[in-house]
Image 1 (tube, helix red, strand yellow):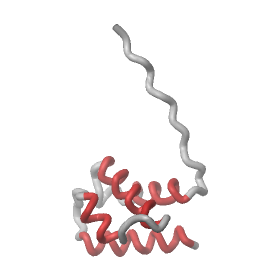
Image 2: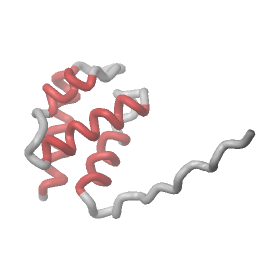
Image 3: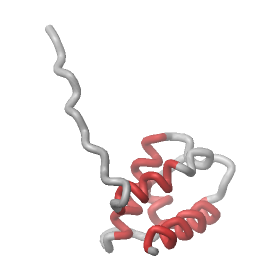
Image 4: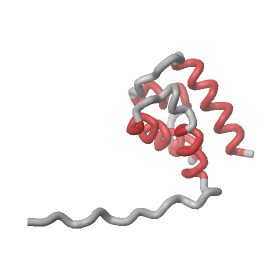
Length: 88
């Protein structure tokens, strides 16, 4: 019995909104140590940027991310600043 090799995946283009958001959140690894939490939060922030999701503070709470060395409010401010930079 054998298993199939995993499907290849394509990376987002470097200038795409998705890539910019995921990179911004990945850079906060010190505060969000679990990779799945960062991915879940990134997806919620992407939805926010496309007009479908909630604000960063609500996204943090809904994503149930495990935080380290930072409060929810401080992280929300960092995310809002990062999203403002992406908009420009």
